[in-house]
Length: 206
Image 1 (tube, rainbow, N blue to C red):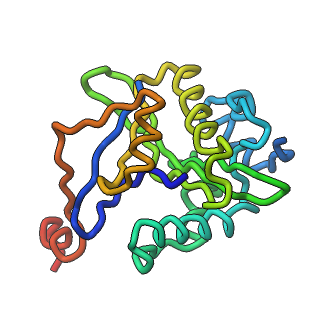
Image 2 (image 1 turned 90 degrees about the horizontal axis):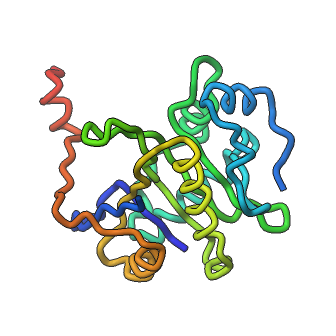
C-alpha cells in the first residue's frame, strides 16, 4: 500500500490528510527509546511491526526508492544511507526522525517514516508521517493499516492530537484506504515550498 508523501509531484497535486516479533534492540536503539520518552516496543499491536534498527538502513532506502518509482519520480531521491543514519540513529543527542518497519519471513517489506510536529492551535505535538510504503506483493495483507494503527497508538499513548500526512491527488487507491480509516482531507490548505536557487536567494546566499 503506497502512502503519504510531503513532496508534491511535478504537477504539484497533493492533499493533506489527518487522522484525529521484535529484535533485541541495540544500545543505540535503547538510547533512542529512552530519549524519546516512549517504550517503543509497547506501542506495537502486530508482531510483524517493530521499530527500525541500524541494520534496516539498506531496506529503508530501498523502499524509499520503490516509493519514488510508484510516485513517478524515480530520480528524485537524493538521500543516502548515511543521511538516514544521521537522523534516525544519531551518535549524539536525540533523533529527529523515527521509523517503523514491517517484516514478513525475516524481510523488511514496509516502512512508516515519521517525525513530530506541533500545532499552535492545540498546543500539542503530533506525528507527521513522511513516508508509508508497502511492497506491492504485500498490499492487502493489512500491513499498511497496522502501521497506521501503530502510529495512532503512539499518538494516543503520548497525548498527541493529530496524525497527518500528504497524498498525491491521483493516488486514488490510497485515498480510498485512508478514508476507510476515518482520515479527512484538509482541502482548505495549499502547500508552499521554497527550495533550490529560490531558497538560496531568500536565505541571502551569494
